[in-house]
Image (cartoon, rainbow, N blue to C red; front, side, top):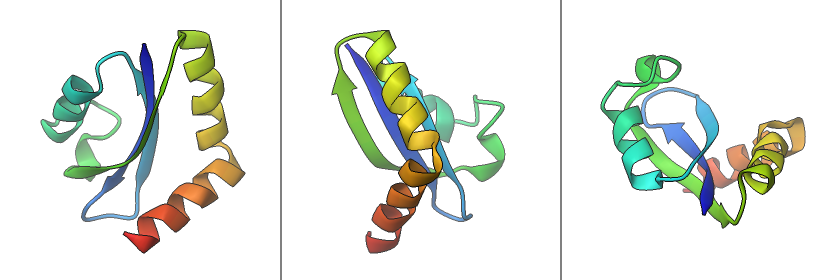
Length: 81
């Protein structure tokens, strides 16, 4: 199983979308400043996640959430939290 997830910086206007097979560990890495692309935006909160069966499906969903339409939906979701 794979997870597609979106995290939102608690302090800055930043949303990151990614995929992983271990969501709990991946979130620890982001918040532990162990990821080069996100360490300047930590701490994060989980904004969205979904579980899919294959890496191929996860990649398709990740691309959607990174698109203009997907990012807009994530911003709306973040702003209602």
